[in-house]
Length: 433
Image (cartoon, rainbow, N blue to C red; front, side, top):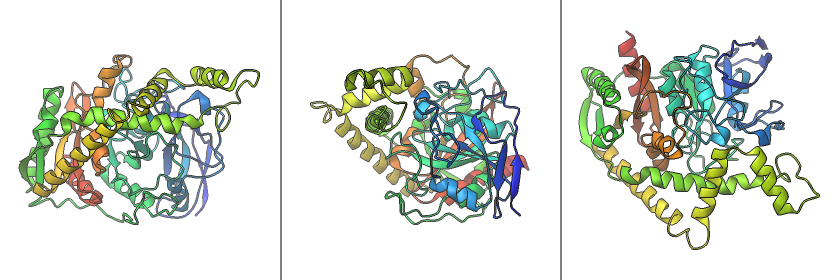
């Protein structure tokens, strides 16, 4: 029965940018369920900022396709979650609305860029939330906060109404405390939308199975190499051992293109960001520019004042990579590397049914600990490859190091999201038994 859900969370984590004190809900499979939505997904009548000052007063006149599906399923949309500005970050520290804190340890980052969604779920403020994943932005905070999060196959979930950062990489996906709830939310949001030309009509309607006997799990050594905390690697290998105990088999596989993945990812995503964020100019979006100044001066002043340092950095990197005389050296070569990575995953997934490894190379680090952009970018080394390849990937908690959660990442073939969910579910059920 339709009604209204009262929502006034004790948000000591700064997980939300905007909350809805009275959230209406209807009938359906999620009737009355509180769901949080990342603040780069359009919600009619609810402020949507992308974590940026430049969109502080923006209230969309329409719902994203996934939000429309949530409403039809009866969900109560209780608020918009904090995020790295325009999705550009791995810690949720670049938000114009202040950093989000990890509920596991308030001195630690929750991961990013969907850190607010992960923190809201981990803290028990909501049972499930939507995030977006461009290079690990669902899986990173899921791992750091000790919850489950799925990056669907590219083209499985509509991006209509998602404020774009890097179109060819990003996907909307579900986050929840359990794999079963991740699957429930995925069943709601993965329905065809003709307004997204990159989407295929492959609805998800799946109840997870814990049967993994005979399943081949590929173990790429590249996911356990330099930069990965040995204790994190050991926790993940122990988790893979649990799956072996359930009857799965492990096989060695190789992703040699991994050595080019991070460089290719950052060239491609910053190039697309440079193009996508050009619209925030004080004419089409953002506060009105000072018309007493020349357009170029007003445009520069507006963006300098209202866009954060990391966003400006990525726009400049992308503009350079696309500029005359350099596009062939950077953007074109990055696309060649992307094709190589996709081929490597294709080859590995012919030898194995899924691929397993750590989600993140370390556990959550302290707030303010990583100020160097390069060290921050290196955090994406294990998650960005799945976005380049367009394959599904899920993170599920698999133990702790120094009291902080570790994530097991399961990756699969394109449009075999159900299989990666099943493997994560099998592990989760076994360790919770």
